[in-house]
Length: 220
Image (cartoon, rainbow, N blue to C red; front, side):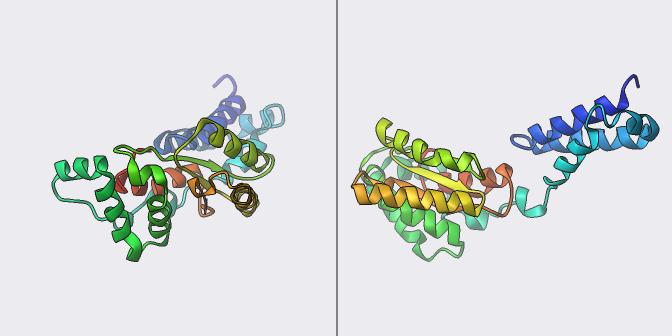
């Protein structure tokens, strides 16, 4: 009540931060901002310039949740055994894991096919009892400029496999170019996969790729 414009600005900023990790908090904070604006329209307008309130609201509008951002289907997963103990054996047995990945060659979901094809050609996944696959997401300037350094660091520390979800064409083009440069240098480009992920925000990345990777019998 003391400062509705400030409260609405904080609620909008909190909603944008929550969007990166917790969609339920995003909904709570965005609804709070809307309630403040509806309950105190005059006070909010008077303080809007000081708090750059409408700038925050406009930015928040760019992150509207859509159904495909938060929903994924079990049909996107690799086929899983009925007995959970069988899955543990699959996860710890390299030869069984490779066969599991090869069976996904005709999977109906394109991203699942691409991930399975990428994973089964990685030496560590073919040989190690347990295998870790790392995933990160990047998009836009200036963040796309860090892809080269990120991949070089991954090579130096010896990451077994890295999936880079590219959230716009700038990141995808840059990532693909860096991986091609690594391939030409003979440094192990087969360990890196650039995948397009332009249909949503970071929440989409989590829901689209993490369950599929886990169903591939690797740790991530």
